[in-house]
Length: 623
Ligand code: ACM
Ligand code: ZN
Image (cartoon, rainbow, N blue to C red; front, side, top):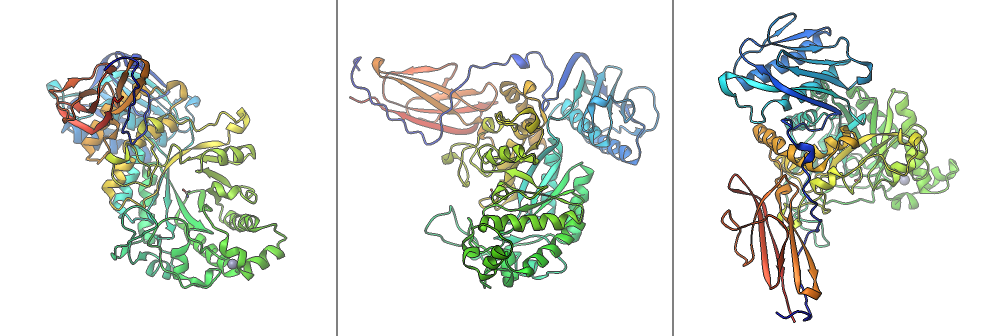
């Protein structure tokens, strides 16, 4: 092909192309550690502490709770080593000490100080919760595969770690309405949060497609509202088809108490969400008199937003919600309750005589102010139960309730607006923290709702917007990711969508920006994957998918191909003739040039096995 010919390059690339950065592994040089989330302060030293027969755990100060934590540690270490590491109240020799004495005030409530030397390991904190976090760090100091090393022992590197979180709210939401998951899985999900040092589990319990919490006063909610007669097949479209499989389930109040207690032992607060005024079709199917039209309704079989919402003009609506919330407030010790507030169309309210009469009687401007009236009334009621409310950012419309916290999901604008009004904010923008979005090129992923939220994109998120003053920024209480489950019928797929993005979220929530480092995170993730493997988690390997970036230089009839992944120093093999890459193919070391038509197929390999999907891109040179 001659120079200066007209060059047309056709690139078949469905996904997004991100540029590959130069590899910078400086942050990882020489370290023996792979902690996630990265602690505030880490000083490594030569030598190690050895777990071996005769090692014991000693508790210093504290009470039954510390003893319980120590027993959990003891059991975990025994399961790894095979020998007993008993809990004692005083012991000499090779000892792990858990202490609630003499921890610096600067560690506050969630920080810990961990000192490991060849002579012993000491974990010190001001609270049991922080000891629990330090214990998660101890687990990560152990070899990820947990294998015994030489001479029947496991070593923990000598290190001093002083650590505390950046944000006080570190969480994840799980939608159990679009698909229902059993209690045991909910507990497993809580375990995943705990190992990532998260402290809030937001449980989305009611929606159009299912009501999932037993309410004694309103049995129809679970008799009728917990079940749908079928579910949309495939992606949401204009031509919808449904299966006729009855789907549903709910948690009894005993099960709710069981989950709350389980979470508490892991220092996780459970925030229930009861949706209002929208996303209420399951409730309205059970009690149609609470709607504007009177129904009848059927529990939703498809996704999206439904026009039928709770009638804001009907006193019975408030009586119902107050009774429901009274039971909810008793079940959940959380000081904050999520009242939804998102995606509530005003269609019915605009033509409902009762709603219009309410607007008139209360001197409201429009239906947005009616929604604001609704939420304020619920807030006032919940304050009598000593509960604050949090709602999705639509609760800003028509005026925020006086004490309401805002969960910013439609980007960060709602969170910024709320912080400027001195309301507390939890950031969970769909731009970075919706884990129902694709994490790799859609063509290589199971069906998802849309989006493109790679591990790197999650990692890159900073919850405190630059637009805020220092004073306003104090209202950013934290951050969470959300898992909506329209396209997630199985628990295995929940794990796939959530992991490993939860690890990136953990670091967004816990680690100070000065300590964050994407290149080093990728290195640490290699051990984190080992931990997930050991736990049998069905995590996604999409971070190993190869991205191709092709830069065309027409003047020189040249295309430069750069291959990258979201994994550490990937071993990438590629072909140019359309054949499947294998370990005998060309090794990718650095960007390469193409001068003629080719189909680039590339994949990452680990221990001789392909990991992640093959990426294909055709480059056509034409006249
Ligand atoms: C939401 O995603 N509708 C809060
Ligand atoms: Zn109405």
